[in-house]
Amino acid sequence: MTAQPAASALGGRSVAGNLAAQGAAVGLVFVAGLLVARLAGAEVLGEYALLRVLPWLTGVVVSCGLPLASAYFLAGERREDPRLPPTLALLALAGAVAGALLWLALLPLFDAFFTTVPGWQLTLLAATVVTQLFTVWGKACCQGRADLRGANLIIVTEELLFLPAYGLALLGGLHGSTAVVTGLLGGGAAATAVSLGRLAATGFGRGWGRPHRPLAAEVVGYGARGQLGNVLMLVNLRLDFLVVGTLSGPAVLGVYAVASKFAELMRLPAVALHYVLYPRFARAGADRARAEMRRFLPRATALTAVLAPPLAGAAVLLLPALYGREFAGAVVPACILLAGLAVEGAAAVSTAYLFGVGRPGMNSWGMAAGVVVTVGLDVLLIPRYEAVGAAAASGVAYLVTTAVLVALARAVAAHGTRPRRNRHAHSIRPPQVRTPSRPGRPRRRRARGAGGTDGPAPLTAGQPGGRDHAA
Image (cartoon, rainbow, N blue to C red; front, side):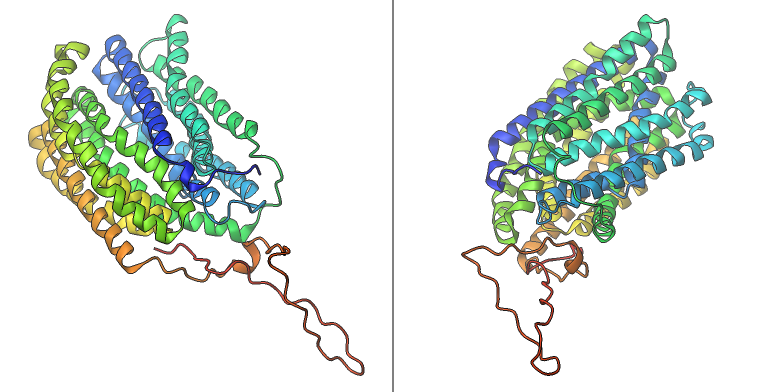
């Protein structure tokens, strides 16, 4: 594996680059949604919004949060272990296959959500479970290896490549959901090629050892604890989509999807901060990560709070003008969501810190608090107020989640992140290299009969200070 930058290299320039990439990706999603809305209507747009999320969710959940864990292990103390890359690659392959099979098993359930998508097209979309998992995994590997240019490239291309695929489908005479499904299949395959190609070009496949089962178990354990929080975050972000689509129909869902996507512009700076700070904290060590978390927390909070009012004004002016009168009802939900996301910067820094110091389960507790609020308020508000009720429920849930995450991060920082001994330390830590500045200890002799013989060299226990990343 090639040498990787130090934590200090992941600074302001990296945040700015990732923010630009995230902004470009959101712009491309906006253009894609606008095209689908104009050419196919609100109903197909609502189903397109779900079809972008569900295959990704299926693959990432079945893989037990492999992308999240890959970024952590490639940034952390295991990053020079030659057994790590092949172990991660095999886990990605296994997750892709299992995710596709699960998608096929859930087809009868999906029929309830996709009224305009034929069953045979839903079957084909099992391929997008594979392509999305490999794309996201490759992006996470670039993030963990501090290849932010590669990660930014994948962030942009995974959204960009839907557009030419969708355009070719339209030119070929396809329309409606058929053109959308074709665009998702073609764009997903191309994005996977870019993602895996970037890993190959930057030397990810060089110097591999053999995959290692105990290391795989630790990766899966960390990923599962962290992915629980990510799934709960997705519930906070997208449960309202499912409830609105079920109770109010695809047309209302299409309007609400426009409001939600616009409001999530607020998340761009927060996402960029999290994307860079997560591997930075993992590389820096507990003491430095703690100090940097405390320094970044108020700055990130102020950044997103300042952006809320101008974005609300933009929503009033732009949404009806861009999408047409049919989507005028998206303005009020968008403003409500922006109010809830105004402190998203604090959530981003807190989450990055908990992940970076090996406490992903703590982040899951914070997300769980938001889910409780989301479920309760969705049931109360959506049946009566539809899109406005969904926005109010999500806005309150965002505020509650942020408050809990900040409290948990401060608690972990106050009590320290005491390392715990890893039960796989003998088998997964690389052996210590003896150098002139660090001579090896003299071997002890064990008496064996007359004269005695040299006993076996003592086993090393790996590097001190290991931890099992338990939350």
